[in-house]
Amino acid sequence: GKVSKMRITPAMFGLPSYPLVSVAGGSPVHNGKTFKDTLDHLDGKVPAKLEPVLHFTLMNASALLVIAGVMKTFKEGVRLAEECVRSGKAREAFGKFRDVGVK
Image (cartoon, rainbow, N blue to C red; front, side, top):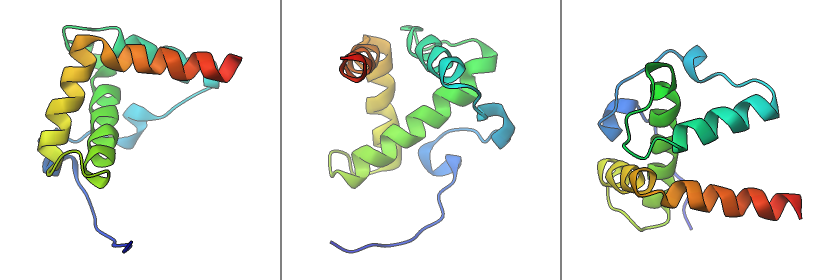
């Protein structure tokens, strides 16, 4: 394959920008809880303090979907990732991933 370099911005995903400090992590336990709390909002309406984390997660998921050839654009990837959060599929997949790590 070919490696290419590009600068991406939240606007390319149809998402707002936030200061990086708003998605800064902490301990593994804190990060896991924050991620789980973000995925637990099946209506997609997370508390304001978790919005940057949700949007950052959607950006990363979207980029992976585009790189894998599943979606053509970042905005399409965000829509699919949002649907996975709303449907509970993202939470279910995270649970399976977590469970494999503790076995």
